[in-house]
Length: 481
Image (cartoon, rainbow, N blue to C red; front, side):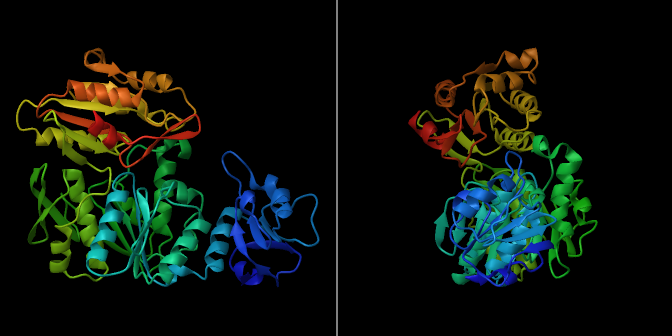
């Protein structure tokens, strides 16, 4: 247990009603998780306001409340702490409660539209293979030393985050790598964490429904680098026009990587095939198992980060050559029919175009490209026609289907996608709403050596329909078919 007065350090207190010299058993932002001795933080969210649930938290035993507005009725046994921003205060309170675990190892954050998962996973595998105990927080899972856990968010809430980092410190981790989403920045989830470095990948169309526009999306990413301390490094991709923007106001040491421009870390693709990439990094040639030019950026970013963290060139290059892509990232295999199947998480226009361009470059003859793709429900609608247009532009056959329709009707999502396909593209496009049937149909179309891409879900083992997650694995469905 920690004392409330210690937990409130740097939370931006405006007013306190009640004693602060009292023990706190846990910090929570979900009233359903409140228990005797809890500090409950009332957070204003998109769909609910935690201030409405203060009474429930107290009924379940919460003895302290962080809030922006005091409730009309106060319990004399409960301490109320009014703050300017309860989301920011929660993040700092969580870090205080867990005794700032990110000060006990080197934490690296990776942000951008595409490549976050691959880079974070590459870095974790790289350092693990070199004998360093590591932690990982990514879209495809969480690692605490050698223990793996599932995750439901790219960047968890601050209480969960600090709890995970506390476990990593207890497990003796020397490094931790995490994806930092734009949602996490806006919602103050990473405030109070101590980063040794940050990596920027790229910025393309995504989450504009949440942020309201591209500039707001850019500023959410930039805020991560603005907050880095002077002791950290800021590593950005110079081949993305926003790379320099990310460095404008950072106090961190500025470093860069590029495949096309002069940079601190330079690379070049010498050969690309389904077996991997032959690259020149600095003055050294290296063979890597990851496929596609877009992965050359991910490899170069991982190399640069490792070097900035003190690893030697030779051990870096030798270890990188043994690493494989994260689950569901250009995961390719041959089907019984002789066709090549690829499962990829590509769920943005830029990511889908990168994957399809890579497939085009890998063609050696008359192989047809067959693409199965959908778009998620209750998310950025503007990218739906773009996704369909890209699929039709690079494919010989397209099957539009459902992704995670969530609370929307999948037929309506597919109609939104069709709006981006011209009459010529429509002649090679099918709509099969049931995703399993769509994958089976695409397999039936694919002949020997054809290339079949199933995009959008990658590593996910579920399909979310009307609030229920049903078991679903694209790769398993392909193997069945």
